[in-house]
Every structure is written in C-alpha cells, then in structure tokens.
Amino acid sequence: MFNVAILAVGRLKESWLREGLAEYQKRLSAYCSFQVAEIPEYRLPDDPSPAQIEKGLEEEGRVILERVGKVPFAALCIEGKALSSQGLAEFLARRQQEGSSFAFVIGGSFGLSREVKERAVLRLSISPMTFPHQLFRVMLVEQLYRGFSILSGGKYHK
Image (tube, rainbow, N blue to C red; front, side, top):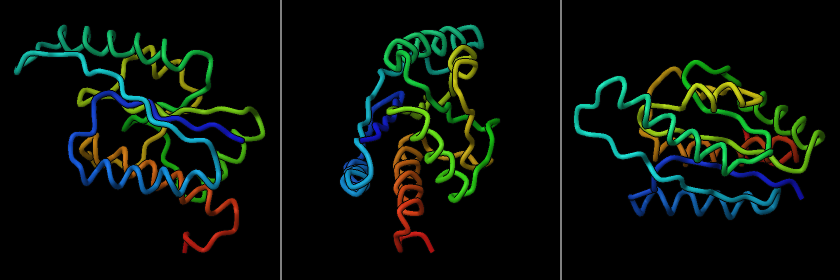
C-alpha cells in the first residue's frame, strides 16, 4: 500500500480541526497508509528579527529533513506550483508508480527553510491566499482524499 505522510510544524490545538483531520484520515485509509507527524515549532520572541526568524527556520528545517529521511516530499509554500484537484490526483498517481512513500511538508507561520524547499521534489502552492497553518493541514488532507477519490473513479469529486 502507498504510504503518505504529512510533516507539519506545530500542533493542532483546536478540537474541531483534530476532528476534521481524523475524519479525512479515516477516509484516506481506503486508498493509502496515512500518518501525520508534528514537529515542534521553534520558539521565537514576540517581535523576532530577520536573523532570529532565519535561525528558527533553519532549526525547524533540520528536524524536518531528519524526520523525512530519504522519502521524497513536496514542500507547501506560496511560491510553489499551483495544481488543480485533477492535477494533484495525477501527481499522486505518478508518485505511486515511482515509489512506495511520499510526504507533504507544511512549515510554521514563517514558512520553510531554503534547504527544505531545495530538497523537495515539488514546491506546491494550494492558493495565493494565506491560511492559518492549522486549518491548512485539514484542507490538504481533504485535497489528498479528493485526489485519491478521482483516481479511483469515486463520486466525491464533482
């Protein structure tokens, strides 16, 4: 079975977001082995300097790259490539043909380090809009479910 993971900086704090994630995680189990790994957010002062932000991104990036290991991954970032739901489904189909595992990486409020973006096989943007990172996690899982539903000919995607 195809293994899909999300590595996300920070914890889901709101119960309604955890419930939404759990619902789509349950639905995804028909198509893949799915897991979410949370990476601790680097603590920054209330008004961090650019150097402090850079240090935080580097520390988070080091942990992300350790956790992802050799698994290919997509870095979620605003400057990434935008895909339609059908495009994401086609991307998932190609990844399944090329290997048994794939990950999606979501950064914290300041994004992802340069090293993480450079190592990614895809820089992916869901929208030019800005979303709360916790809500975005649920949105991504819904899109993964939609993508697998498209691939299987399911009726979820209309």
